[in-house]
Every structure is written in structure tokens, then in C-alpha cells.
Length: 240
Image (tube, rainbow, N blue to C red):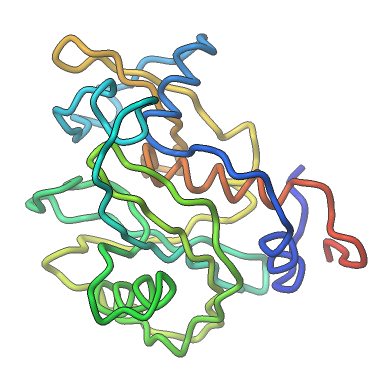
């Protein structure tokens, strides 16, 4: 069973030194294809899956490739509910140029006025879902994630304390929803999947919560959070 975490213990895990590793769409695909035993994507259940036409062999994170990366940041928003933490996610609108209709964390590319990646994540979150920057208690950072489209994304983990109002930008966000943290931290819900697209085999992690299909970079960042939280417990900090 997934452990119960407090705000303090999550922060302590994020602050622990950890060995950097390459994380991203390409690295995940290479690891999963080598692992094997992948489940095919169920298009009958979830409909067409938006994707990019860039082959994995040419995407960001390809070993030996030199790709100009665009810095970006997302907020991994944990909501402190009485019954336990939940994770706030968005569903992008279907007419966006990049990743239309996909489940995502609020975020985007860094702008010149952003002081750092935390400022970028908080600004983008305020613009996309209307959460004021000072309403987020930032706990720490996950590892940078390289998307196949050339973004180097810094996931910023922060906590929200109810009550608060979510007001999605209708241009970018079709919907927002919450997933129990215990659900996405349960390895039984971490799926390894693949699909064929224009003659290419794509491999990625996915999580299905009710009718929500969480996959690709978002699922990869959630897996990074799982790895951080389920590392050895920090000395002097309990899980309660």
C-alpha cells in the first residue's frame, strides 16, 4: 500500500541528494522497449491519442543528439485534503498546437521576466487555472524532463490548502480534475504501453484514473515523484 505523506516529509524527500539521470520521452521509450511486455494502447476505450510526428530517434534526449532545448516549467500541484493529498491536473483544449486534448500539469515555457523556473511554473499556473502565486507552498523540484518536442521541463512540486477557486483559461484548459495521490503512487496503476504511429513504435508510461488517460511526459513526471517519495526515508522525518 502507498505510504501516507505529510507536507514536511514530501519536502524532506525532495531535498535529499539524488543521482541525476536522463528523464524524458526518448529515454523512457528506449528503456521500455528494452524492457518488453508492453500493453497496446486501447483506442476503442480512449479514442485517438494525440501525438507528434517526430520520431523518437530524432527527439530530445536521444543519446548523442545535440538538440536546442527550450526551458519550461510545470507545477505539480498537491492539494491537502482531509482524506489525503490529491493531485490537480488539467486537460488541454483540443485546438491547441502542441499536445491538444492531453492531460497535463499547468505550465509552459520560461519567459524573460521569470526570475527562475519556480517563478515560471507559478506564473503559468496563475494564467492557466487562476491560482494566485502566493497560494502555493513550494516544496521543491523534481528532475528535469526532456520532451520529444525539445522542451526541458522543470517540475515544481507545491501544496495548495483549500478552500481555493480554480478558474481555467478556456483557450488553453478544457477541464481540471483531481486524482488521489495514493492512486498514482501505487505501482499497480503504473502501466507500460505502446502504440504504432506512422510505422513507428512508441512506448511510454500511462495511468488510467476513471475515464482519465494520463500518459507521456505527465505520467513520466509522476513516476519521478514516486521514485523520490519511495526512496529511503529521510533521517528524523516520519511518513505521518
